[in-house]
Amino acid sequence: MSEFKFACPVCGQHITADSATSGGQLECPTCFRNIVVPQAPATPDTKLILSAAQVESRRASALEAIPKKPNRRRSPSLLVRIPILVLFLILASTAAWFMRDHLFHLFQSDRSALPGTNPVPATPEGWTLDLTNAPSQDSRVTGRILGIKFNCEMVTFEGGILSFLQNPGLPSERRVTISLYARRPETLAGKTFEIPHNRTGPRPKVVLEVRHVGEVPSTRTLGENYALRMEFETITEDRLPGRIYLAISDEEKSYINGRFDAQIINQAKEPPKQPTNASPKP
Image (cartoon, rainbow, N blue to C red; front, side, top):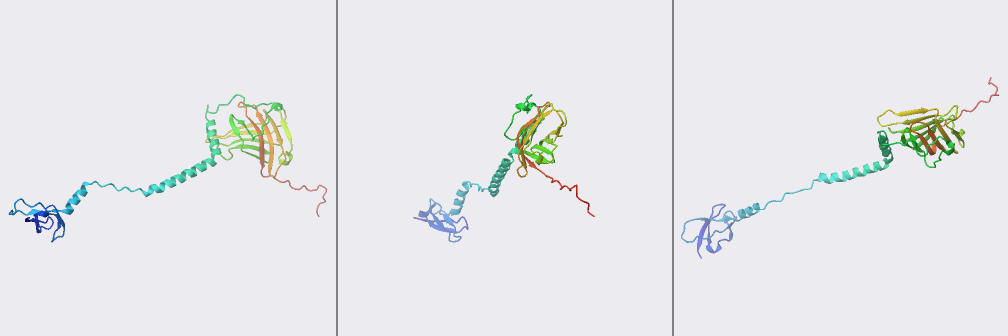
């Protein structure tokens, strides 16, 4: 074995090592860096100072050759948005479920206002001016007014006016009102009356009204050319139940038929009558 000298690649310190340690590692006595002992020279009398390699540099170069994986982090905002979106969808679905009837009526009203979307037969089933053959419907009041389907949702009695309403309070409201001569519901309870089509003389006034979104309401007032049959039952609390059949001799063959339960509104009490034979006070 023979010794040879080489220089530290970091601080330049000359180091003597045995040729048997070539390729191994040792620590520089000056800078304390780990270096790799170079190969010993072929001739021992050479004056060439060899340079060693730094262990850390070789490791660093090897690490630099390995591509770094990007540090992907999940955005915390996405984790917050997902529950909010799910909550919004649940609330929207719940609101649509509770308002499904009104939304359906609004959709039907808009379609019925368009030509050709709601074809009307010449004479609907159940329409007749002959009250002796008029059908009696046990379900709630339905029919057709001014060429548009009518499904009654509310019936009121106020001041002698009996009102049948669909979509009450909405822009697509439909209404049938009958002005009766009896202003108090007690005078109608338990009574049945008919007004044939060919009857002469005074008749209750009938008004048909259909509203379309963003349009002028269609209104028709009738004092004749209709047949009417009404049956009133006993008053229960503030309700006046009954049954109605109304057929109108117009171009659209308007009619309503079915049972109703009218809500009595603002029933005025009659003031007590003063006795006629009472002596005047002095």
